[in-house]
Image (cartoon, rainbow, N blue to C red):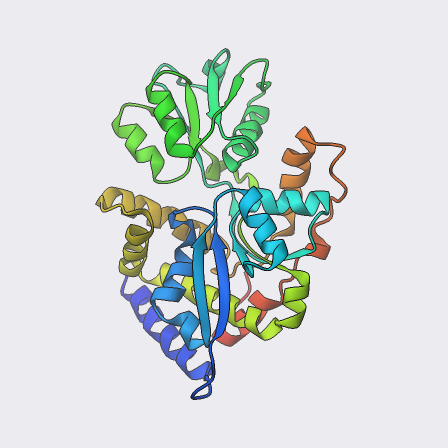
Length: 334
């Protein structure tokens, strides 16, 4: 604990020494859309609340945009400059080839969700004949289908997939009402279900299901015209991720602000879950080719085989910005 705190202090000192902004320089405006009010976006909020964006002379406005039909056109039109999150939609856009975009970072590598079920279900075999509630074309559907394939159950035949509108809390409520027998949730939603008597059947992190989660995405023309701006933005994000890993108290504060949760168990579980994911990448969110391609071939192609025009994510990835951040902060690539 002490070592992490010392690291956080040294990191802030290093940053202040390695990035000087000319006095009187006008901050660069950057509108960043994030896809849900969740702890997922803690590095962005830390960068803003701790002044890391400002230290890079960035005036970052973070706006909530939910649903690909909202944020993808906004990104393409330039109404937002960065899309923070939306991994399922970004991988679909790469697969269909419909957007001239580039992913400059992905913050997680594996599906971070849990399958929660009614108490009568104790094993995967018990799912036969049952109903799973998911959101259409979302991460929870992707995770559910991968899991069913893994345990040898056929969606639509052995297990009924029930598509439900609204977010994960709505689907959790539907299970409590007896409308479905299981739901896929992200931390810390499983805690409330556990308290209500429901069981965790699977933690998908244990299976290392490929998923390039929480991407940072810009349009290619914007990147080409604003390389220093994108470099500074990603540099601040990487700094913030290191601070999150090193400072539990700071992590708790930003999670509480993002989720409005104060329960110490929920804060601890959420912090530990994201720290585990950030530790897995050494705190360096290089864009992950395998995760994006896994989404394209393992999910989008399943439902839209004719629409998938591209299965190679490499032309849509640019790791140079995270690499530059690693060099600035003297971090080793993992």
